[in-house]
Image (cartoon, rainbow, N blue to C red):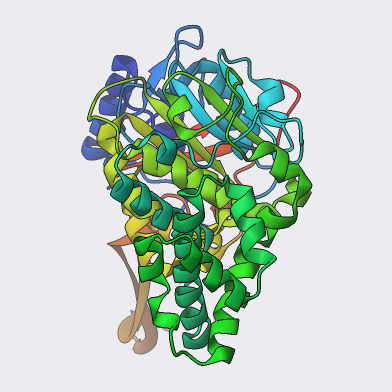
Length: 487
């Protein structure tokens, strides 16, 4: 009977025909005590409603989750809800969901594109492509929002935020590392404020910092006579030299990529007059693809972290319910380091921004954010897609959330008791007592609760995927291009 429910689309409610079929099947379950081959009968105990819509492939748009027969399950652009996608390498996070979604998307999008495969397979208007590895790339203006801000105090606040993005807190830092990072961040903030207002661009500031010892750097900051910058380094007066040197070392480590990369020197900069460039505000009218080879992901992780976080910060300041819907796609989420994603998920719902994260497992998220924050983060995703996972910490909570069935099983018991019977002997007129056993059989029914989809089954979904919503779930087929299939 459960298979019958699956065939009727109990997990894909949203079309009248599916609702009707579902109702018929539930009526049968409630009115009919049909036993299966094991002498059990199932009752559905999961809420089957879902907010995803089933649409004709020719007219479907928005986030495309997968196929249900000849229809596509999707969430239109103008609806709310962030999406978390889980699946191992090669199971279809990019090809079966992200690429089909971008092909149908009617708003704008920000995409981290590893190896450029997404860009090559998606034809979208008004593309801006930023390639950190390409010195001739469209440049990224890391100071764009700061340059457009007229108030100096607000500029300094944005520069302090940038310092925090360059030297983010890491959950696994011990107290010593945290001290050096916190104090090193003060040094970085002071340098950004002092040299920004002196007219330097970002890469030049990084070079000044790294090429100076701590004493020279502090003197250079003081020489700019910027009182706000001097406030940030006041704590170093009278500090032990070895502690200050440790802070400077932590600072250098955080920005070495920007100080020494000749490629980034040419593509992280303010643009020339009339030159196209990428900055977060461009997402209002453009589709931005940040393309990077997978093998260089760890090297450029600090840059991806800054670009991603600056874009999220910009979008959090949008007016509520205005402008085009922006799809914010974060492939391989765990590689960017810790960004304040939880707060972004809360704020962006009303900003017409939909976040789509793609990662392999819960364990990847726990490594960066920890169990507690990851749990809060997951509560802010309206849709979760499981394409397959062998991680038990991923399988168990999703299996539990999918729901259960109550199975009515039968149990037979046989009892024997000794009895005596008086029977007639073969000799006429004689009787004798015979000892024997009386056997009786009883059949009892009992309820047994089982998972609709056992945890281990989430590791062998093949061409299927599971879409979880706050109201239920759907079992769909992956929407691969024709030549792709998971066996």
